[in-house]
Image (cartoon, rainbow, N blue to C red; front, side, top):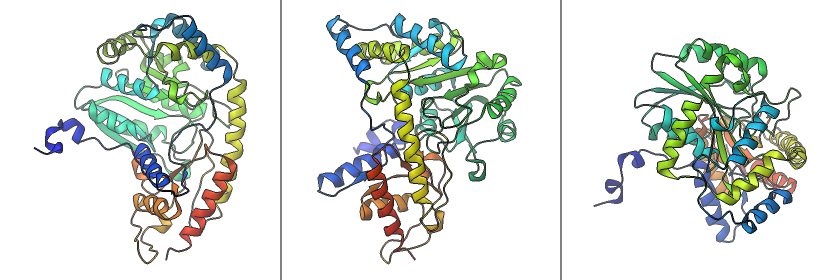
Length: 401
C-alpha cells in the first residue's frame, strides 16, 4: 500500500506550506556548501529582548513546570486584556481570551470552532499561505477576494459586500498584511465593519500579528474596537513578530465568550494549555514597554525603503512601498514566458525556484498567497544580505530573454 493511499484524504488534499518548503530547500543547498541568502521565512532576525528572557528563567526557578490551564494562566489572560484596552481600544475580560501555541494555532482553532462543512469563508487576498488550508481542514468553502495591485492589494468594502451569500460564515484578513505589508486604514476598516454590521450571522477574524510593525502616520486600528460589531469580531495576535518571540509559540484570540468557550473546549481535547515558561515570559512582554519593539521597527523601516529602492531598479519589477510588516511583494509577471536558454519561466513558482537554484536567493512564490504574479521577499535580514540578494536577483534576470 502506498503512503498516499494510507494517509487520510484531508491530509492528501493539503498543500505543503510554501514558506516552510522553500526554507527547507534553502537549507539543503546551504548544507551543500552554497552561500544561500534566505529571504523566504517570515521571522525577525532579532533576539528576544533580555527582560523577557529573564522572566522565563525566573519562571523556571519559581517552579512553573507543570501543565498550564487550557485557556492560559490567569495573569497572562489579564495582561492580554489590559494590552487590548491600552493599545487597541478593545474591552474584553480575561474570560474572553484563549492563549494558544502561536497565532497560527489560534487561527486554526477559531476556524475549526466556527465553520461547518460547506460554509463559506471569505479571505482577503493576498493572504497568508495557511488560511485557505485551515479552511480546507474544517471542510469549509474558501472564497478568495482579490485586492488589486493599484489599491495596494487591499479589498474594497464593495467587493466584500458583493461576495456575501447566505452560506458566508467567516471573513479573514490581516493588517498589517503578510505578504504585502499593506495596512488597512481606520476609514477602510470602519467601512468594512459597516458591511459586517448588516449581517449579524457573519463573523470577521482580524489577524493582527504584525500590529507593532506599522509605518503609517495613522498607526494601527483594530476593527474589534468598533462597538456595533464587537461580538462578531475575533481578534488574533501574539508575541512572535513584534517582540521577536517566534520560537516561544504564544498566540491568543479575544472574542465573545461563547466563541472563547468553544475554542477552549477544542483546545482541551487537542493540545491543552501551551508552554508554561513561555506564558510567564509573555506576561512580561505584554505588561512591559514597547521600547525594544520600536527599535526593531526602526530597522524594518530602513530595510523596506532600502529593498524597495533596489527592486525598483530591476527592469520589469513593479513594487509597492509596504506600510507594515517586513516584506516586499513585487509583481514579476514581466518575466513570465522568458528563458535563460535552459529554463523557461512560466509563473512565479518557476521564477522563485530558478532564483534559488541559480542565484541562491530564497524567496516565496506569490501563487501560495493568492497572488500568482508576485513573489514575497522577507526584509527581516541584515542590510548587507538584502543588498547582496537584490544584486544577485538583478544580475540573474538580465539573462532572461
